[in-house]
Length: 519
Image (cartoon, rainbow, N blue to C red; front, side, top):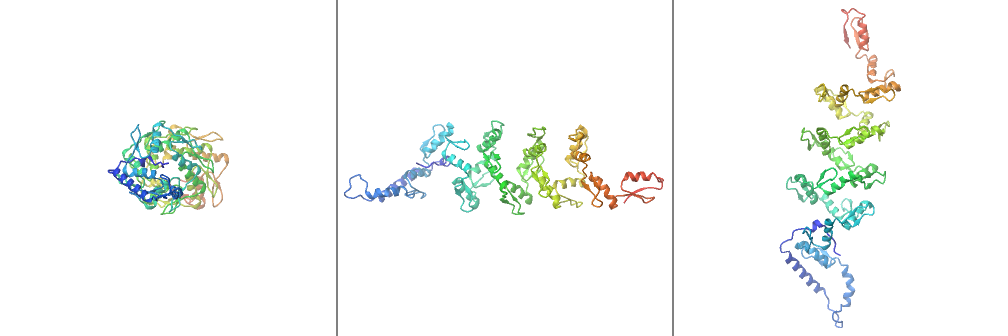
């Protein structure tokens, strides 16, 4: 049986003078075969094969180097394989499709091609039920379930499900990129990747989603996208049972169980579980921000950050919360929000055990234990644990107030202050006390109020151990010990920690002989 070849590689333009080459090669092959023949015994009958030929017939049948191509010196075990191979040199394609006129070297390639017209997929996966038009495609697919990777790289030992994948992988070691884009000059190691890249310039998207009308440049991307609508998740995690629509996502998920972080930054040594996390991190060192916003010209390190930013211009929030109706521009923000309703806090501090909704919040919280404050204000020298806090602080020096109230025009340095302010116009009090039902504009006010019910006093004076419900109350109290900020009467030199007490004291003196000052 002739080994099937890939249809795309199978379809090329014929070369000139190809038939002369095949004729010449065929004649030379026949001549060589005649020279190899040994005359039979004189006593043997006419037409009877000599006995020594019968004995060597089985040996020749398994000789992989028996038939040699005179053009490229490739060797074959059967003459029919050589015949098919010669057509790759001559361009001869004797088998044509009657529907689209595409021609092929082998009849088996034509049969496989015909299934693209009929839609026939006779080979089914017994594990997930997926169907394929070619048996070879089913064989490759089955390895996704079994995890078998029979082909490995001789340099790094990485395994692959297909031999062609190894050849493509070798380019990562050699650095060879033979396929160049004629538009922008970018080079690629694989021709298929160049073809996909060219669609960026042409804007071609031939595969539309019938459900949401979103279009894709590749059919496999559309297939993966359709699983969002169908809810199909073919790849389960054997450790925790979680299922995924894409195997690559499952592979990334498995790293959360193993703790493996194979992608390391060459500058600072920080490791990542995914390569696309390392790429934007590396740009924090180089300062590169290759993704600009066409509306406000702001630049970003990653395309995902730009995509999220664009929604601030369009106001698009496609992810609504089914509990409270609040919408979000990103799915991950919705997932974090859902935990407010469920009370789930999957990320905990290893030092104090405090739980958090987001992993990044744990990282920021850890700095309260280490005392790390890497962000320095160059104006006043004050330090912060988060870059965003430093950005907000810098506005106190510049006087910038970019967040304006549309009702009264008042400006704010921080967006959350604007949100809180807007509630004074709307009267909204979204934070309610579960004990007495009192509502508050701000969550911080609710937290403070709850201490009146619980009796909690988390702020303690380090000098006298007295405790307070509010941090501001502790700050006022500390004036008694430090003497800082006390109000002193010029007449009797008596001092007061609070201005209200000081004002009452002034009324005891003649207003002409008393004044106020602060130490």
